[in-house]
Image (cartoon, rainbow, N blue to C red):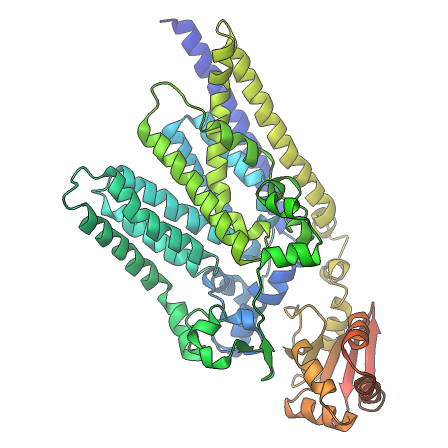
Length: 562
């Protein structure tokens, strides 16, 4: 044995460990700096912070009919209640980021056990620096919680498959699946797949074939029971409110008498028209060809762009597509258990992606739970490059392959680092942290309606009730009572006989003021109202809506009689 070479290799490994650990620390600090600005991301202002704030104002959880998303499960949103109670809306971002760190810890534990600390640390760095993970880490969303609980469910299920006698891993996997469902409805896919995997995996590892079916079925049913038990509080709440434990999902199944209609805020109903999901959207709206739609599983890794639904509203790394292929390159004397685990990781990723593809408009966030599995497969693929090169060049092939592997890792991390730099340019946290920009100025830079909301908060009476029209439902920064009004506009103006009738309908709902996006209201009226309805609309605003404030295309109007 060449002890000198072995010592040199260990030293190199230690240096690599120290280098990657330092890069992880720098990345974590950068992400925390990006978190330390007021929340301006859309879903945080619409849902994830707005609803907990309303609960605090009300003194507890209550039904909010005009917000369909208030019926979603809220495991993480309830955590945000704690810092919001103390008046801090930046800590929720850090809480959300903490779930990315927990996922990274599981990736480290998994890879370290099967490869080495160097590869495990690289897996952590690669995962935390993936563009969509960076973007989610600096927002008060819930997707990182879903990613953690989903991967934890898969991780513990594989641990149980390795040691079936350790039933605690099956229980933990089921509980994590239940928490995934309680975080976001996308967790239903995790629960469904894990419930199918549990009996299948047991059937592959048990030596006793005589009791195979009974034991497999028992484990599968136990998994389902535990998962649903953990998720049951949210189902009970929604059943009590809407007679549908998964409201607003599956409404046609639980309430078929409604004829495919579901209620929206002010008592009106909105028809839900059946369609073919992603195919209708991408062909009818984005005008994509059949080939472009067929290549979606590849394009989603290559074409992602923040803020563009057509470009999947997020960005992945192309290396998540290419490196996992190498993870399945055949090797000599490979552990069959590791081969089975990699197949499980791949199968979970493919099935989850397929379900998400066929059930909704494809967004990167919707397939987030597959990212940890793809990261692990990527690390395995990276670890195989030296072995593959050594097959071609026997003399010094392994050393050349190791250098090439490092180059691939550097390029992959460089791709992610470019996105991190762009986030510093967009978020611009340093000017805010230095005090050069005030909180109101910072929010107004990203949310032009903030000027109008500030006027409302400082000038309208405490009992004012605001009707938001084309505001994007962003109500977090409004300190007065508010409701969303786009859904009722067509019925209100299209069916009204005169402007007085419109005013009467608004007064019956205790509306005192309107907050209007002028451009979108005019565009909506032009495209949706008849000439008679347009005359009623104009008469209503001329006679019964007095302009109080207007800036950057947003107007505050006071209704007559208030």
